[in-house]
Image (cartoon, rainbow, N blue to C red):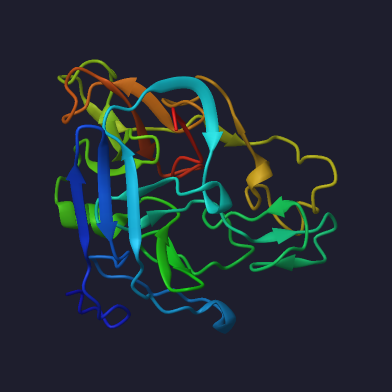
Amino acid sequence: MNAHPLVRLSSIANWTCTSSARKLVANGVPDHDVGPFHIQADLDFKIATQAISFSTPIAPVLTETAKELGGPQGDTGFMLNGVKIDPGTGGNCNDSGSNCTLLGRAGRWRMEALGQTSFNFGADSNNAHVQPGGVYHYHGIPEGFIKKLSKGQAMTLVGWAADGFPIYARYGYAEPNNATSAVKVIKSSYRTKAEPDAHRPASSLYPMGTFLQDYEYIAGLGDLDECNGRTGVTPEFPQGIYHYFATDTFPFLQRCVKGAL
């Protein structure tokens, strides 16, 4: 039972494995403290139990193609506590920036939940908030869950992606294929663009980093590929496996997957 005043619900997450699949049955209720959300009244949804049934391959197959997931495209993945990963938002603006909405359709410029201060999605200390229907979900590193795991500065498994590959949080080996190398904070390979895209709302109104389109992937800039992943050894996979990272900067959680679906 999560007795936090903003929850007061039992958190259920049951993972099971067959010869071909890793399966989750959960209710989507976080197992850690949440909030404060500090959000406008029309977005102040309450956490509610969900009927989650998620299945991912037990033997994932890496491909060369990055596939975007999330929202209508399907779930990107789930944390071990049964809470959904959903780093993108439905918020958007028109070209002039005169019409913006956190819920609805105003234009093509897609707001980010984290890393900007122009729009308030009410992300709490766990980089999470609540969608319509009471769906609590993570946009970034699940700090409260990581604290509960109590592994400190270690490579920590926190979830599974839709393609079956594991997700780790923040820390990884300095040498991807050497488990005896130092543990360091893993960096993404994205940065904000030097110049805004054509027809973007003025950066004087909305600074760079406000919108999804403000970011670009630069191979080799950090430790990870365009899906915030890399191949290497992990505590759970000492022979090596492709795996994703939750990072402190964009994209925070993977926005695409590299495995066969």
